[in-house]
Length: 214
Picture 1 (tube, one colour):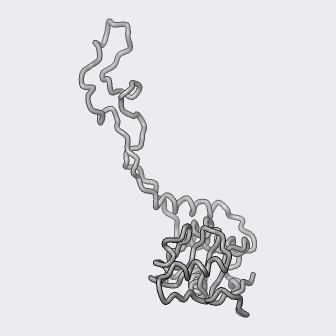
Picture 2 (cartoon, helix red, strand yellow):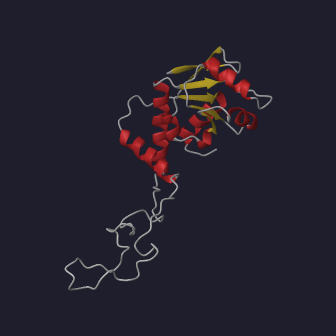
Picture 3 (tube, one colour):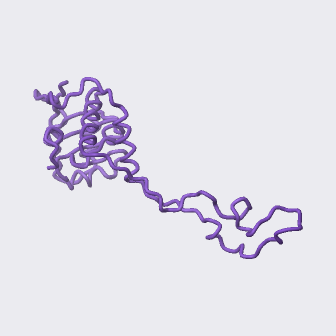
């Protein structure tokens, strides 16, 4: 599948980009792999902030409510037991849970290749020759994005960090800037539009073919 390369001013050019045969996936049969890598990425960035108090953490409850036998009531040793109001939580999060999971390099590479093909076939991937910003002006990048009519959220993929582009786009809603080395399966699936520079798409394709991180 060929994609026309856009000039820095946002106009069409005579140049085209197409995936190498090594990277083309005609039919994605292993959707489970994409799901596994997607959920693993979410788990790896999840912050474990939730923490509840057990009966031992709740203040008070040291005195036994009533004697063990002879009252006709159920036996309790503390007013902070989980089934009483004001008691602790029986099986709540402790803050020690580990939600991260490991995906091997070959599987992650294959999932990224599949996600890139999905982005191409769904027509949400665009390639621009380069993005030139002499100053970090939001109006300049906004004008370019409006001209290209990209649906948000938009991820702009560069070959290396561009400080002017980051500063110019950070006030725009649902516009994100990443380098090709930081691009994940989640980015390719979640974004409605992906704007690659010509250099960044060439480098990510080279990495997918070789498996090297450059």
